[in-house]
Structure formats: C-alpha cells, structure tokens
Length: 360
Image (cartoon, rainbow, N blue to C red):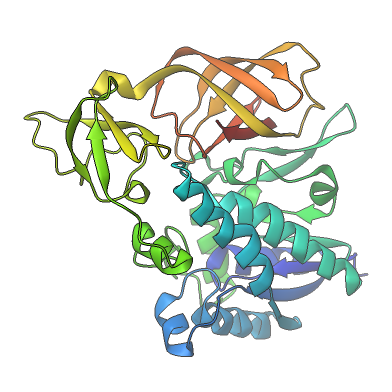
C-alpha cells in the first residue's frame, strides 16, 4: 500500500537520486522534480555550467527518474532564484559582507517555493538528498539533527527552515554515509553512482564573484585603500567585492610576512589588514534569528556549540538575548574569521540544531 505523495528535488546527483530510490522503497508515491533556476542563458552555457540545476543536471535527473519508474517534471523557479538568491548575494557583497547564497536558496527557493507548488499538486511532503536528519522534540517542535556522517553534514546550511517546512520534509540520506549512498546507487544500477559532487556556488562556475557582481549590477566596483586598523594606508585594493574576512591570498601586499583581511568598511571603501592574531574574535552578534529545537531565549542565556561557517567544527559558547532579534555570542576560546553576512548556527551537545542567525 502506498504511503503519502512526496516530491523529491532531484539535482541529477547521486544524493538526490538515492533519496528518491529510498523513498520509493519505503512505499511513498514519489514524484521527481528539478528546479530550473538558471537565468537567461543559452543552452550551451547551461551545459558548460552543469552544477546542481544546469541542463546536464536535468538530463541526468530525467534518466534516473525513468530508471526508477517515477514521474518527472522540471519546474521553473528563475524569478524566485533571482529575487531571493542573486539579488541578495550581490547586495550583501556591496555592503562589505560575505553572504551565504545556499542558505537563502534552501530557505526561500528549495523549500518555500518548491513546497508551495508541491502542495498545489497534492503532495504531502518534499524531500531532498541533504545529509541531515529530522527529529520531533519533546516540546512539540521539529528540529534538524546532525547526519550520520559528520564530514558531509549539511544542517548548517538548513538552519533557517521553518517549523512548517520541517513538518513537510523528508531527508532519507541523513541516516547514511556518502560511501553508503554511492554503494546503494551502484547496487541498484543508478547511472549517477560515481558522478562527482557539485562544488562552490552553482551560479558562478568560474568562482569570480567580483566579476559576476559587476556584470549583474552593471556597476564598476571602485578600487580603494588597504588600511591598518588605525587607518594607515598600506596599499590599494581592487574593490571590496574581491575580499572576505580572514583572507590571506591574493592581497598583493608585500609585508614580508603573512597578513590577513580583518574587516571591510564599505562606507569608506577600505579593506582593513591585520596580523594573524587580529583575525580571532572572542564574541559576535547575530540577527535575523530562526529558532528550531527551542522557541527562543526569552531573556535567558544558552550554552551551545556554535558553527560560524560550513566547515567549522563548532566552538563552545554562551548565547545571550540582547533584544527581540539580536543575540550576543561569547566563545569559551577565540574563533578565527568571524565574518559578517555568514550564518552562526547553534547546536546542542546531542547534535540538535537549536537555531541560528546572521552574523552582524
């Protein structure tokens, strides 16, 4: 007997392909969907880009869906991707911040928009190939729990999902390691079993963020000064969109020893340079908060492990409510390269996502 209907977001990669297979094996009525997000580009460009949502991804996903015997559709989300991801990405860089477009895409495109359209066609759930697990808490809330494989865990990029979205989401890959997922794909004959993982930001395949921002905004980003924290000019930079906090390579400063970006000042068009120890911080503030396993702090302090970037292993800290949508985070030990615009995500000792926000 079939279970409820689930729309699986299929990127053409092994993770989402196996997710569709696992759910079908569990008895769900599975529908495969690829989200077409590329803006106005030729098919040749899309083919070259590949990535998680390019033309080659569509063809791979279509073939996998055919092999699995499930219906498959391509849904156009260009408008949503442009407004919620690309416009946000460029605006943040122009403010001297370092955005995380994958978090925005997950929250507003892969979940909010896909879930809405999936509900409209009668689905009960959406599902993805993310490495994360969903857990029902004793307090009645739903949260994400770290996946079986810590090196592939993707809960950091999913911290901003809402309670309603989580209640309508399935993530079958979270109970497996990457090697186990590839082994399943091999065993059942999925043609994408050994397809490489997509890397970096899907809509900037050449990784030249500054060039992309100039093209997207039709603005020439002005050059400016490298300065020390007291304002002493020590060189000239190519435009603030070329830099991020903690960066060492590509600065072009002959200091005779390694120096790092420690801050970006868009109001004066300056990039602040410092020594290695200047990159470490004992605290940060964060806003745009989203609470997951708990409803919020209500004026209390919280002990947690905080991740300040995707590959960060996490650091013990105390989180204190400052006001309605602002917390202060004080780390037990200084952490490297606290970067405005990136997410800070709070975890319990058991691996539940407590919540998170955007670093101010």
